[in-house]
Amino acid sequence: MPTIFIHEDYRFFFSNEGYPLKPPHVHVRRDKSVMKFWLESGVRLAESYKMTLLEIRYLPNII
Picture 1 (cartoon, rainbow, N blue to C red):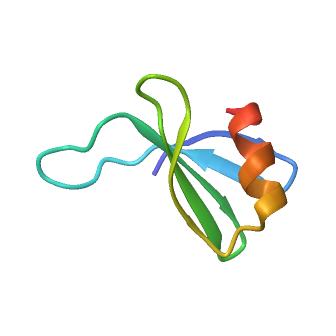
Picture 2 (picture 1 turned 135 degrees about the vertical axis):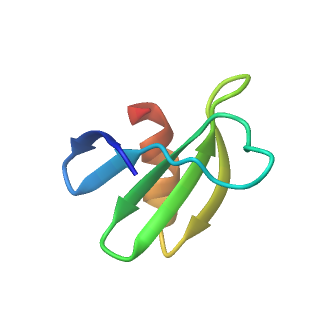
């Protein structure tokens, strides 16, 4: 999965997944925590695993 960029302890990356391919999205990982954001019509949270509420509010602004 190609890394887009790294900000602080977060790695932002794309992945090709699913068939048919899912709409454009970006993943964010920190240690064992991960989030996925849809990129159509703005940045929207798709799912989050082990991220804090503060991170959920902060990371879309970075994207």
